[in-house]
Length: 266
Image 1 (tube, rainbow, N blue to C red):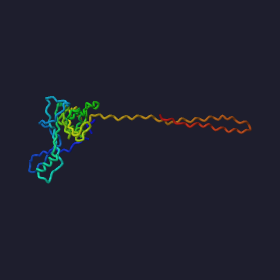
Image 2 (cartoon, rainbow, N blue to C red):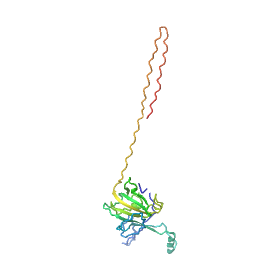
Image 3 (cartoon, helix red, strand yellow):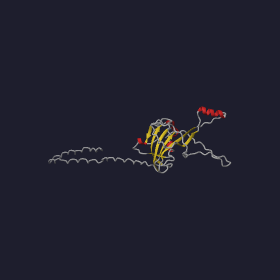
Image 4 (cartoon, rainbow, N blue to C red):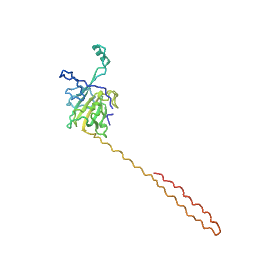
């Protein structure tokens, strides 16, 4: 089982953060390449369907794990600044920001989730209208879903969504479509669908905990008999001796044994 297979995501760039100038040389912008520490402020989440289980009133608010800004690959030239801005707005090519938000519904007591480990996870995935499009409970024979963090084997919202968790913890993830299945969708997920996941980090390990099935044993073939029965012996001659003065009769040729037919293999 898998959530997957290859997932589509729009080209995104992190917003550069200008570094403070310490010397006369111009400072280089710093670009974050990993998920930033979860912010302390609350973020607004979309209204949820009543089909999605409500969280207890004591549950903390949703926080942004990180925010990304998609920078359109266009540049306006040969136009006054005021006109250039209006052209970009008219064409709808302004930057678009989106966040991966989360709520920790249960803080785990196990080890912190570490990068590049193998995670065993229980999950339920919802569309915004409350439809359950997938759940580990639908595949009880498979047990927990196993993924390797950072291996790009799942959608980006999952690959980075366990940051800050501990084993035994539970979390609700609010994944925008840019970090999910994008404009193509996937199975029961329509194009450009924002998703909600309830996840539980069951365990983590250095190696894939999924046992590899042993190779199937080859079925031995029945031996093919190759021995042929010996040919039948020719009968002895029974010609009587000729009387005196007469030529002995020519003995009849020995009877030829019929050709042996080899047995057919079973």
